[in-house]
Every structure is written in C-alpha cells, then in structure tokens.
Image 1 (tube, rainbow, N blue to C red):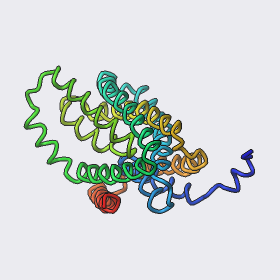
Image 2: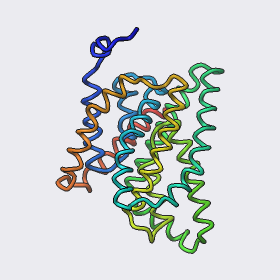
Image 3: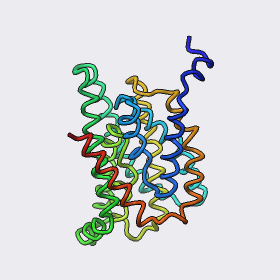
Length: 267
C-alpha cells in the first residue's frame, strides 16, 4: 500500500516551484494557468500529455472555485451567461471524454498524440487572443453589432461547445479565448461581470473534464498536491504585485513564449 511516508519520499519540490512560478504569472497577467502549466509538465518534466491535462484540469477546478466564491459574493457573476456557456460545454466535454477513452482503448497512443497536437493548437490560439485582442474585438464587434438576444444566446452556447472540446483535450483556452469572445458578444456588460461569469463557468467545466480524465486514469494526485502547494501562494503574491508589473511588456512576452511552445508541440 502506498503510505504517507512513500508520498513524502516521492514528493518533487520542483513541481511546487513550477506551481509557484505559474501562479505568480497568473496573478500578474490573468492568463489561464493551463496555458502555462500543462506545457511545463509535458516539456520540462516529461509527464505524459493525458496525465498533464487531467491533473491540470482538477488543479484549475480547485483554484477557480475560490475565485468564483469571491465573484459571487461581490455580485460580479452573470449566471445567465454562465448557464449558456455550460449548456454547450458540459455535453461537449462528456462527448470529448468518451472519444478520448475510445481512442485510448482502441488505438493505444492515439489519445496522447491527439492531446499533444490539440495542446499546441490551443496555445497558438491563446497567444493570438492575447496579442491581437483589440483587433479581434473591433473586428467581431463590427460584424455582431446588431445581433438579436436570441442569436447572442446561441453564439454563447456555441462558444461553450468549442471551449468544452478544446479544454477537455488540452486544458487550455477557457481564459484568454473565452474572454475575448465574451467581450465581443456582450459589449454592454461590465468586464468584471464577464470575468466572474467566465471563471464561474470554468469550475464545472474543469471539474467534469478533470473527473473524466481521472476515470480514464489520467490524474496524478501527488502531482496535483505538489502544484497546489506552490501555486496558491504564487497567485496571492502575483495578484498583490500586479499593479507594479508593466502589463504591456509582460503579456507580449508570454504570448510569444506560448506561440513558440505551441509550434513545437504541433510539429
């Protein structure tokens, strides 16, 4: 039986250091942890893509639950938007997980290959959303300016479907990509309410996806604990120091790094 002493012996402090680094960057920039954590686990530590994604999804569910509670208590969650996103993302997540399970059972390493390619694609999309957010918002707003409430509702559900598939496969995309589209779909809604709604939606999405990956054998609980040990203080410190960081400099650097990693994973 795997004892507590065995767990302490197997504990790798470098995971916690990475968790602290990613947590601090999330606090500085608001960029989703999956965009940073999953590539680090895969490329630097050699964690298999399925385990990296599954562990990171539960890590995101735990860390974003606290953020949701804060936003809910402050009244900065538009539950209507959250429900619309979840109506699309949860069914899409379940279907995607069933597909991954089938691929893993029928085709051996096919699931790992699919996840690696999807992770690279998601990182490239996230980098583009960060670098070109203003241009993307202007372009979308120009084409969606006169949409009816019904069309906005269905587009939000469609966004949820897209995020459900992408996040379930790669653990990346709910933050930068989701927020960019929400800002365009709901230009009259306060940004803080869109942020709160996006975070609130990420909790059931990442929990369902992470639970599914656990059932598929893709979660390392000791790794998850190690990441949380470092990331929780990292997020707190990063959030506290965020005002002192030149955002116009740090975000392009992060986006460029994500794009480079995305290209490496895609080829």
